[in-house]
View 1 (cartoon, protein in one colour):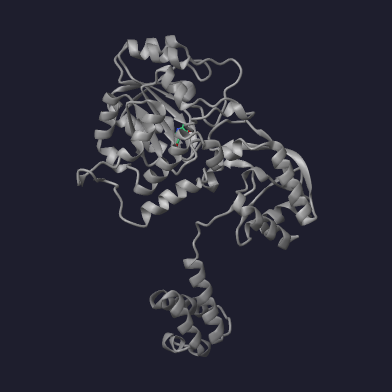
View 2 (cartoon, rainbow, N blue to C red):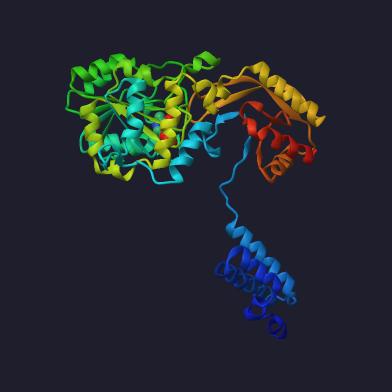
Length: 448
Ligand SMILES: *Cc1c(COP(=O)(O)O)cnc(C)c1O
């Protein structure tokens, strides 16, 4: 009992010089909370037989607690994993122009919903819509919070309480809880699955269309591949069938490539332009996958359908914010100016010359006087191009315990995400952003 009585009161702790410093740094309220927290934990310890602590230990523990509470958990990392659109690491890194546009619009008032010439209320949708029309030639466009929201909104606006057809082979789960059948149900659409898991024919759609339906949805497989005895109709044939029946074809395109991945030693990822040419009436895709911009969902298509989408109450609930709109507009501008490959980090990584990567890995080896350079492969990731990789060169380290080393890398001031291959820790220069290279080398130097 006397040990408990030795524990100082909060008032005594508040008179300590160290406490004044904590209050100065963190503010009074949270510091008091931390002192109470620290006192409580020592009180529990004493009840379990521990001796009473010094004032210093109590204050040190309070400071550690303040640090734990207030240190941001969303912090930059160095991606040396070789996965370009790493979903867990935030997908697409942004171009400089995109960052500046987002910063500019967030540091002052803006024309978000203001028509300057008219001096009255404007529409937030205008900021990206003009660029999307110019880029793709569509009649209408809308930017929302993400592609999951885009698909949910389109189905809610066009297929609520009506039949919506989709191929059995496309009832996919994308990850992070996005399952096409669940999203369809959530929208109120009556899901009609046609064909079989591996083979779906035009005639399957025809049969299902003997009863009235609101639309046909087609979803990009994104993160998996069906191989072997498989069939799905050509998009253009499906579009023709839909139009004959007087229905729209809605395409959940997923990654939204505007450039051809096949030019860079990868498989061909369907592009937005191809989907339009084939006759899709509405197309949904992400802003932060192969488009290479901030998180967003982009919906483009025919005006009469898009008007219904824009007027649906959910459109307000999933609308894009000003940072997103500024960022998407800046990223789209790169495509319009023909500078996407140089300016958009994801495309700069995809289009990088493999010899340049080898030289970079060699220079790391020289600087660090350690490791070796070995051939390997990088991946695009972000639910695109499953099983596809690009040749690269890796900087490889032989260490005693690769798992332990990865853990040390994650504990660095700027955490480094690497991977293990054949018992070696490997770093892919392809996905290391240029401004982080010197940090990476300094940190590795400190570890070796
Ligand atoms: C990634 C993906 C989604 C989800 O997009 P988010 O922008 O992550 O919400 C939906 N459909 C397909 C086909 C996808 O590949």
